[in-house]
Length: 315
Image (cartoon, rainbow, N blue to C red; front, top):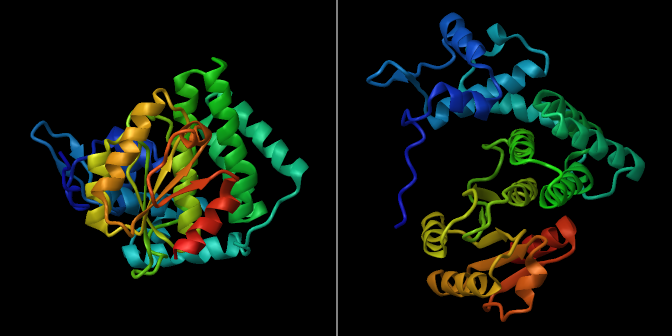
């Protein structure tokens, strides 16, 4: 059954979850609350701090502002709108070019190699620093295509060969998600932009490809709703209708049962409006292409360039 999304102001996240999502150690979170009152978490019956989605977003913004060189005391009193505006100024300053294009191949390959090394060492801080530096150096879209896409491919291949443990993939996913959130900070997209729903079909637990799609679409001006992985088609359809999605993008990395996945696609197609497109992309797409795909399905087979073309057509 489809469940309504909880209110962004509802306190529901314990401090460990907030620490993972924001990249701030629990000690820093407590210090910022005590000294600067940046957020006011509620308490559970057992006295545990509970934070809302709005709190998490505010804390993430403040962390990014301090990492750019500002003191927490200078930004703690900013409103959410002021913090978002200041972050947008930083992004425009750091990444002046958002146009498509290729970066220097040797430089990108070196960045990917170093990112793999840091991932294998479970050095999340070093990995995030390396990816942020690459985004500022290469520009947003070149960073997505030449660094993030290559890194995700290598991480997935290493995982499938048993060269990486789940912990490596989870760490890389968390870091990439934080960096992509930084690149596509909510609030910079027009309210009347087309809506894109991004997720995966049942059984698909690899979420890095979906994150990449969400970031690329956000940079193109789409309003993106990212639902994570492994959702039944009925829930995907209800969410798409609820947000008025122009399209649903499904990341397909591994297809365990092509017949079941094809059936899920048919179920999804039957449950959504005819004008809502379905976009398929990822390493497992070729397996599904051997089946009869539902009408209105767009297949992305040549990376982000192909995705951009599909999104431009749909817009």
